[in-house]
Structures are given as C-alpha cells and as structure tokens.
Length: 402
Image 1 (cartoon, rainbow, N blue to C red):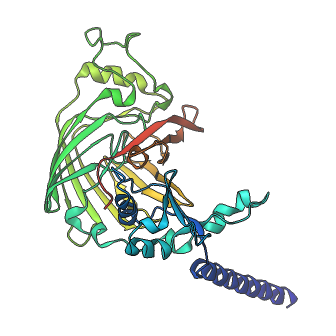
Image 2 (image 1 turned 60 degrees about the vertical axis):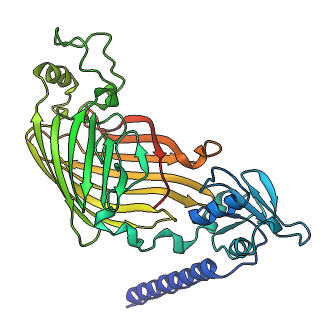
C-alpha cells in the first residue's frame, strides 16, 4: 500500500513540475521584455532587405547582422554588418517595425561563468521551434522551386521559368551524402509533373572510371580518395525518370526511373574493386519505383524544412532537412538521413549528418554560401559502426527565400 502511495505521489509531483515548468517557459517565451540594445534575429528577409535599401546598401544581405542600440535617446543607432547608422535616418515605418520586431537577442545580459553555457538555451524561443508550413510550402505545383544548390546530394535546385513551369537539377541523389553517389540529373517541370534525365560523373565520388579502361584495371593515376566508404557507394547509369507531386498539397511524390544504357562492363569491373565485407557498391540497373511522404514545416524560422520517409532505388530513408535555420543569431543548414537498404544486393545501413554554416563570408556572400562537414556513419568491413566518410559539403543560394 505504501509503495503505491509513493508511486502516485511521484507521478503527481512530476506532472505538476512539468506543467509548472512548461507554463514558466511559455510565459518567458511570450512575455514582452523591455529591450533597448539587441540584435535582430534573421527571421524576416523582407524587413532586413528594406532596412538596407533605405541606407542604399547594394546588394542587400537578407541575413545581415543588425544590432539596434536605443539606450541613449540622444544617440540611437543601428549597426549593419559593422557600419553604424543613425536611427532617425530611417523612415518612420521602418523605425516602427524595428522597435516592435519580436525576434531579438538582448545584448545587455550580464555574462557569468555559467551563462557561457546556458545563454543559448535561455534565448531559444519555443514558438520558433516548430510552426505550421506557409501556404507556398504546400503547393504541389511549387514543390520543386528551391533556390539552394548543394554540391553533394540534398534537394534539387529548382528554377521557375513561368508560373508552374520550370527546371530542376542536382548532383548525387536527394538522399546521398558527400562522396557517395555519382548521379547527376536535370528535370523539366509542369503542373506538378516532371520528366528528367539521369547520368553519372565519377568525380563526385573521388573516382575516375574512364582512366585506363583498355587494361580493365585501375592505374596509379586513378584517384581513390573515398576508399573508406567501401560498400556504401552508388553509381548511376543513363536513365530516364518521370514523377508527379499529388495535388493534395506538397506531401506525397512518386517517381519512376528506367535505365536506358547500362554501364560498360569495363567500368563495372573497376567499380567492383570497391566491394568488401560481402557487400557490393550499388549500380543502377533495370527500373525503380520511388516515392516520398513528407511534411513541410517551419523550424527555427526556416523557409524550407521538412520531415520525410521515402523509398528510393530500393532503399528506405527517414530524415529531416532544414535550410537557413536561425538560432541565437546564427544561421545554418541541417540535414539528417537514415538509410535502410533492402533487396538482394543491398548496402549496409548508414546515417548521414550535415551541418552547413552560413555567415562565414563577407558582403553578399554572407547569405549566399553555406559550408560545413558531411558525415556518414555506417557499418565497416569488420561489421562494426565506423565513420565511412567525413568530407566538406557546400550549398549555394542562387535566389531569394520562398
């Protein structure tokens, strides 16, 4: 009897504590603080552009660092990427929007020995962690439109030409990491449907199968900077693909790929040198029925993020991608993908983690380029978990945010 009484008491204590903490966090999140010296979080591209246009900054950087100092009524200033401007130099409309901007970092906080570690957690706004998608994120006809081009894998660069007609292109597969796949593709889109061409470029995985094919063997000139990723490589063949995003929102996409020209036997012989541990590199052959079920979100102010589950070339994928996430004054891209292969010639399972940081360059390049590590963790030849690939990935932003 005493045991059950103690158990119920503990459950009630935890429940009350959780509710109180949640209420405290919520109040802290929504209470309006009187802040006169702050940095504006980069969550409103249009406002940041207008602020810079009024000061004739060309080109404006939608992710510029903007610090507002209103502590001295006689000397109120705004600092844009290190240059100080008088607050009164801005129009009344822009001044009002700056003063009422809700996403701000208080720069008057005292720094202590512990705040170095706790400041980030305290400054996270709960309402920014997850929000419903915007209307343009769930339009099936605009699903492909994407201003980001990533060197290895990830979402395709989508270029709208007119209304619901455009093109997309990408390197690697939508789910591959750095130095993993030599796939290249280009697609034409119209009204939610698309048709495309898939080919290969071996330099994307640090190899060159075109060298010394007459001897059908790899020479010393043939690079192999990806030897640690045996069993995890993917090779593309010349293929055609068609796909369609169902019109019930940007949530479900189907895709069919069929190989038109198989890789030459000499290329395959060189590729098979990468087989290890009973597994073989994956080579496109025959046809594939692919699909992706996704849920677009707005996480940490990202204009393009999603959770997904997908089947692609006989491999299951579960993951998350987020572009231009904003956290305590920093901007970054995050991609996580867990691959679970199936079928007779399957690769070992693996996990991809990419963390690309922006604001590392100056001027217009500050928001146009993100760079960072791409990590692939999988099963090695000894059947133990190991790091298969650790390389640098990069994304380039070629247009404005959606």
